[in-house]
Image 1 (tube, rainbow, N blue to C red):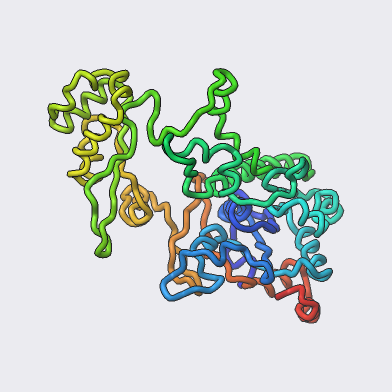
Image 2 (image 1 turned 45 degrees about the vertical axis):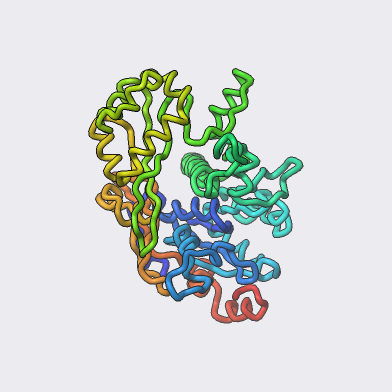
Length: 420
């Protein structure tokens, strides 16, 4: 394999070179998007301190190595992989050589590690004066919490998401996933990098980007913060309910059977006005309970919401989630099946028709699904050019074609325990 094995000519980021010193979620996902749209991305890893996602499932049946994690692989397609020991002087020298090659440096390590490895912006501009250096510390590069470590599961509670998630009579339950890692932080970082690249193409100058994941994650909570600012009201957990809709929630439907086991099924239903309520009543065949005057208005439905949900569940429980959705949608009532992973990957006709999931052949994991590009450009579409790399798969390639090392220099780096 050579660097031009799959040329990226015509891609919007063709020619952009990225040194990806990040790990886990927020950094690698951002860098993968850069690769998808044409950038050459070198992912730097360490065998001594593996990216934790390499050890996290799902794994293909019968396989359990550091190269087959579906979690890791989905976030690292299209990258080259270099394993360095950054705790050696030779390893640090090779890292600096890689950064001098790159247009963009990205990391989500804590400021403490950045200081120890001398990878601050002031140091990097000595290596390349027009470098775009991207830092994603959890809580910023300064302040009393600058060296706090954490993941999306930490950001969700400290930013307030967990307090809003769950039912009022129960403790906060969170989002069920590390949402800040997957959507907000990599997306904000990507926008910042694209802005910096645009500035660089106009001026020839690079710059430092700091994305404090805490601040990035707080941004989507603006309505709750505004409610407190304007009204002095602190939003609390309300389950699936909304103050301006009733019924509004996920309702249990008839179970499926999957691999010999019952599989719970649900349909989300939302009624925002009296016309939609009447349409829901008609779809149910106008049962007697639905004619009760208590349910005739929004105010009445909100006042008696517990009983309303119980009665509605009695109707949905006798039907498949798909039948409920189709019956309600036909009447103009907002409704949708609460899909599980199997539904999304195999049964969703819309995603299939659009070809969202991309199947790539990985040398160890086999043929597996990857998330496709998160957006589409009509003239310069993104492409997953290759599966996620094996650990250290491109050490020789990167050392020779990017760093310009000779065979003797590579051998000496191995002896110095800088290369694994």
